[in-house]
Length: 174
Ligand SMILES: [Zn+2]
Image 1 (cartoon, protein in one colour):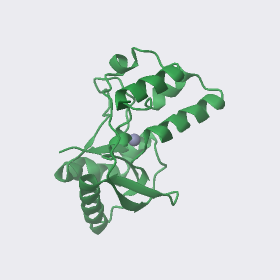
Image 2 (tube, rainbow, N blue to C red):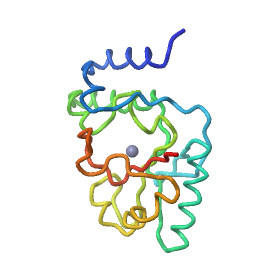
Image 3 (cartoon, helix red, strand yellow):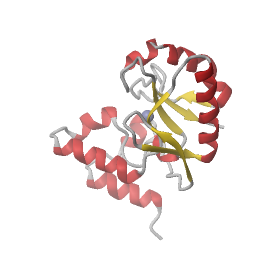
């Protein structure tokens, strides 16, 4: 049987991702969720998906925020291993080196977005996927309330794995 781990190892080898990648960033393999629920469209009008439990909680959290005048918008939620692979291949084609790419993108098989529990959030007043999201009202609201919905910041500033700080990336964890 061709296991998920073998598939990931083969992809990483093909991309010349160093074998110490996993230990260097302390990133575990992230399994692909196969049971997904649509959560509406992202800011680019693409349909987005989460695992069922994460979707239920996300919808509740978004609704509550909205009632308090805070608009939470989706930049990206579930992402397959194949999609992560194509993002990295595109960057390689554009001339970036694999080590540059891995500074900002997880290797295929290592993105929390594979699990259907992670979501990149933005708000109309902010630019998506930039550190200054931490200065928005939406971020302040999330910081105070997201844990009530079992959403947590995966990569806080100065996290132990040395992964870049991502104030927009929240994951459902229960
Ligand atoms: Zn993310």
